[in-house]
Amino acid sequence: MEAPALKPYYLPADAVWFITGCSSGIGQSLAQHIAVTFPTQRVVATARNVASLAAPELPDGPNILKLALDVTSPPSISAAFDETLARYGRVDVVVNNAGYSLMGDAEASPVGNADARALLDTNFWGAVDVTKRALNIFRDSNPKTGQIGGVILNVSSMGGVLGSPGSAYYHASKFALEGFAESVSKELKPEWGIHICNVEPGGVQTKYATSSLRLIEPRHPAYAGGLTDAMLGFINNRELHKVFARPEDIAVAMCEIVGGGKEIPMRVSLGSDSYGLIKQKLEKQMEDLEKYKELSCSMGDPKLDHVTNLVG
Image (cartoon, rainbow, N blue to C red):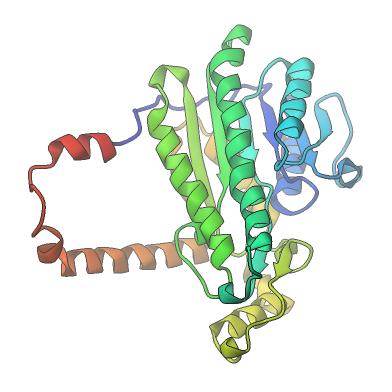
């Protein structure tokens, strides 16, 4: 079934934003945009190294709280949220933005997949643990201040809907996050007023190809000259990135999604590349679905209302 219908969300004028991964890119741009454009709102900007949040990248002020946060550490998550509640009393929007990418041939990942597991710990499990604490605060803590519910924005990617060569583990983390979020959204009671949205940017002019990108090395020789090489060449060609969206534009769009006084959707693609490629993927998926409809429907009881009512 669909997630229970929610009323449109109205962001408070003094909203409290809790944003992970603010040292650069989308997280930093979002924190800056809120601080400058909506000075009555409060921003909790977090990063593994709190020194990376120093001014002028992010201004200081009574409505800015800069905290160290390692999303792979549950005690660190608890400490950051506890300090936020002690300072502001509630949290209205939680943005799961912390993450990085791992590129290379999946087969070449070392035995035990330590590099891939570390990526999942940040991109997926980190967001899961932040989300779980956020749900508790939205449901149990916020009403004590007179504010009901809140919003979780997951910075996913068009890579949470479609896969590209050389980034199997990154895509796995984003697919997992999107599936987790969709399922959780259907568990929540409407009266809690909790909204979840996966934002799916396409290419963004961030440090994706530098400090936010790690490589699986050494490369597997069998894949030389394949599509992973082509993708790595594209990622490393900074000139080609000029057509990407600016992180500032992504930040403005995220504020519009949350602050527009409208129903918040489960997914929003951001960028013409994201929109176009996701649309293409879904059209091909529908084509394949219809092509194999007869085979698909040739087994099981066709009267599955009791299942579709639960799963949707």
